[in-house]
Amino acid sequence: MTSAPHLPSARPVTGPTPPVDRPYLLRCPVCREGYQDDGLRLDCAATHRPGLLSTEYAPAFAPGPGSGPFRYRCWLPTAGRSLPEGSGGTAYRAERLGRALGLTELWVAFSGYWPERGAALATGSFKELEAQAVLARLPERPPVLVVASAGNTAAAFLRACSRQAVECVLVVPETALPGLATAGARADCVRLVTVAGDYTDAIELADAIAARPGHQAEGGTRNVARRDGLGTALLAAAETIGRLPDHYVQAVGSGAGAIAAHQAARRLLAAGFPAAGSAGGPSGGLPRLTLCQNTPFAPMVRAWRDGLAEPAVGSGPAVRAAIAASYAQELTTRKPPYAVAGGVREILAESGGELLAADTAEAVAAGRLFAEAEGVDIAPAAAVALAGLRQAVAAGRIRPGETVLLHVTGGGRARWAAAHRPAEVRPDLRIPAGLGAEAAAYLVTGS
Image (cartoon, rainbow, N blue to C red):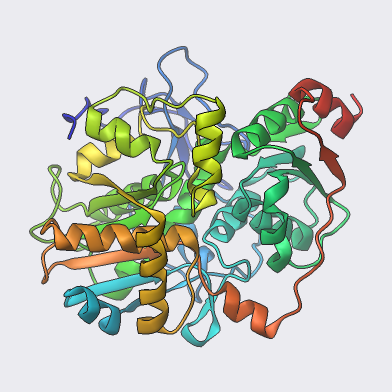
């Protein structure tokens, strides 16, 4: 395990006064500069090492009525206008699964489709929490939003943008098309483009499109709304449990969900919410993060174990073969925000956490175990997380009586398919292999 990096000071800093309609500030973790939010800012304007902007809200934890992510609008970067009814997941104590693992205090945050439990994310993924928050952050007349995705994020934005009439361009690998079937009918304001490559190829094309006039990169992990939307899963679970868990377990591709959970836990601690118990991290009271990746493609696991500054990931045939062989394609991010300020390496160090790798056989077995114990299917990434949890318990890193929160970041798709007719998904444009990002962007935008 690598040593803890220098963390930014938590001392009070001066900054602009938040406007009434956006009662929060954006803060750079490197230079501590503060910004009023325009709904689109992704980065600090200063020149220094990369860092993830974070949001600063009023410290009080004041959940609103109802359910779904907008129950926590006190800690969401919304533009102050009326919001649509949001859909969310559920949190519950998983006694049967806990017995199978030898854990007496296992809790599950289920971000998927499981109506019997109150989980109403129709695409079966926690990415809907992201999409709802991102759209709520946008200014009144936004540019065309450009979103790159391995599949789940595209399904979430297809659904949300179609329902709210927000113009966007979705760029996904050709292989991701089947996963969009649960998103529902696509409105004309949503354009869908596929690439003959992997997620990184989709990102490169999306970046080229976003550079065109009238277009705006959604931003991925750099978008504070993505992370704060995902953080609502931890907020809901902590409310249900009554305190922060000792351990938080999740599979990671970019790590946005884990960063979100860590930031949400820090806000809860600052608000006086009951802390994690004896397993709290070095900073006191934070859940220890157990983050999991899927071999044969687990770049952050290798970087963490070997103490590397950055994950060593190339783009050659061996890397593409490893990605293609991965069971959980949604975890195959080649350029994760690992070493940036506020990124994965820092949250692991601050929480006293670790990164684990699970292979396909372990993940498949874990998915089968969850279905048998809890009665619902889970997505490959969630199965990887459960496989990592089994490893940690077997190694004694998670003890039987500790409170554990397993975030099932996707599930219930088989349940959804049994009750609904999937929508046919056809892209507006297919980009062939070998066509450069700039040329492809011209085909998409005409400029």
